[in-house]
Image: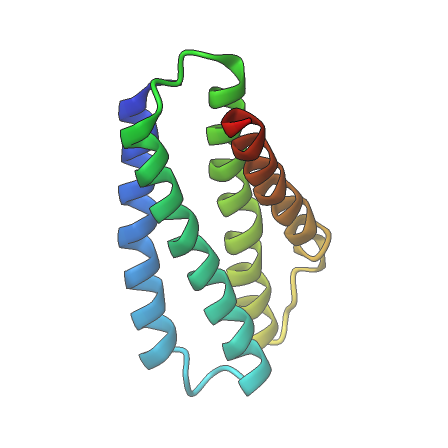
Length: 125
């Protein structure tokens, strides 16, 4: 894990959140129910929040300790598991073929995100 990797992940997630947010607001608006739209927006928001967190820690931490590296991995994997499973669930459900295996993945992603925050707290202590 390097600082450059964390910053690349942050910028990738940030740019993708903007793209997916616009895609959801325009292209998927007619396809989604209000509940699906709200879920999709939650995925985009959490992705952007954590892109910003990765950007901040990428500029502040050297990732020289196992704790710092584990924290970054938790945020990165958490975004992938949480947000991307929500996107998959919403899109597949709207098309009438819900990918049910993604349902249990979302809370695992949330757990990774929470773990990243707890590790950040431990790092401050």
